[in-house]
Length: 124
Image (tube, rainbow, N blue to C red):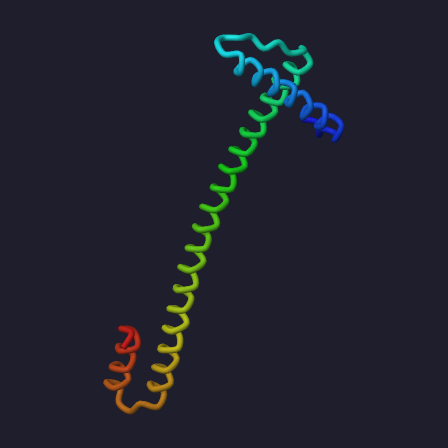
């Protein structure tokens, strides 16, 4: 849809003021009166109503899209946090295994070495 110029906006504003005045006059007269307006005002009002409908649809589409993107972001953020936790767990396990291997290297009998290895594997 093409962008309106300032002149077109001013004309529409003027037409709406005229239409409002006609409606107020009809309301003040009481009863059921017909408001007569030039066809260009009616056409402009219809065009503006159609434009508003189109903009509302566009807004709803953008709102839906923003909602989808927000859900994806939250899911990816959760996934990132889960991966971070998993990475930290693996790092801690690797440190524990390294320490156990260093102890095994300097430990005495094989039984003691096995105990150290079992503790490391159990996470103790």
